[in-house]
Length: 196
Image 1 (cartoon, rainbow, N blue to C red):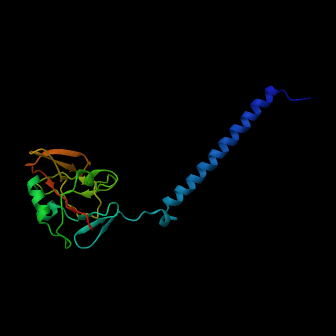
Image 2 (tube, rainbow, N blue to C red):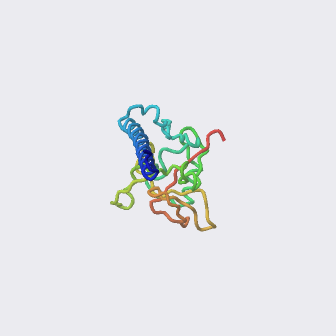
């Protein structure tokens, strides 16, 4: 006596569903094992990326993503005061750090455009908090290889007419369009293009 087709179709469907679930469980288990190994540091040397920034020991930091050199300290670290845009541009023109004098103010993209800008939302560095008895503590989205106590707004070289210029909020990475005469927790972090 033959089994009616009505009973075979649901049976085959149930078997196929069970095999699909079993295969998904095997794949899921495989990924779980890999993630566990990574989490416990087993085999991390093959997964670990080289550090993005290198402290050159001469007041400069080299960025492996784009080859730029940045100053370890910004103008706020160096002078202990804010700078308006004109003062910031004059500061970078006369700056001598690491045996170099070809420093410049960065563009907005060089500071904050992902993935090559120095603003990294996964990083935290301490802000300079002694401005006008400032009591609030904020963190900057900046690698800790850079000096602590930096300005939280950083001027760029980009201007918007005669009166305004671009800056970046280092706490958020947001672009700001500020009056050039403004001087409130503003500084500049100099950059250079080695070999150019």
